[in-house]
Length: 341
Image (cartoon, rainbow, N blue to C red):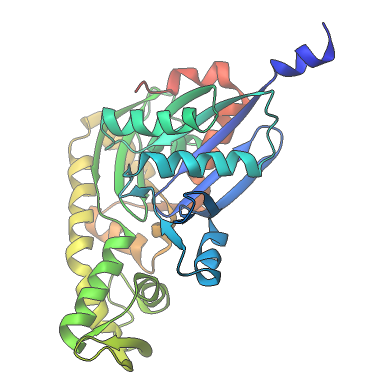
């Protein structure tokens, strides 16, 4: 067979972990090639994509009038199909795939995603140039990435804490036995901070500034209550720039409502587990993944709330993409874990 025809039918296997905050892509035999914010900068004059990921924010600064940043996902769901397809296309192009080759993609999806949301994510990848798209529940991918024995008759509990959602699942024999999800994550803590700043101090801060405060001074258990810091803000009354001293105890107090809902979701899922699997979880504990799992004292809060041992995954934000990488390395064997639209 001529070389040209052989190349035409070559397939490239890719793994896509598309999160509310970050999109990651790995390519077979290459590893991780993209790990940047899930944002797209579009030129409003031409409708063309200017940049994606980290460079999207710079594009808006350089051309603030004509460039607008879009976030195609919110709380784990695709909210803008067209922008999501453009994001995938840009990610594929950056990886320099051959236009003659076929792209086979394995993508993670939240367990709380509806059939419409799963179909939207799959169709966006197909529109971007993928020839095949296979979906996998994010907790399953994370469990694979953490090396949990999900194919054995043993119960493994995994908690995924992300920017837009919290997912809890108990897996056994290659499937999810029980799961609970809630569209609350790190972004909701940041929104609570901005609301507190407006109500208590009469100022406005950006969500990015709120996230910085959470990372530098926040605590799930309020163990940083003696700290404070000064942040730049804008006065609600006159719009003037001002500096405000923020107390950690006020910020941590604002976190309690979303954190309580997350802990309730975790407890309800674990409480619904069959007795034999619940015993396994009691012995082995729960594994926590996702970028938000690195929030100060979060593991201690989960342990206190559930009474279980908490195992922090190494580099928890990469657990899902690691699992997907293992899938594309052995697609025939891993097909049993895929989920239909």
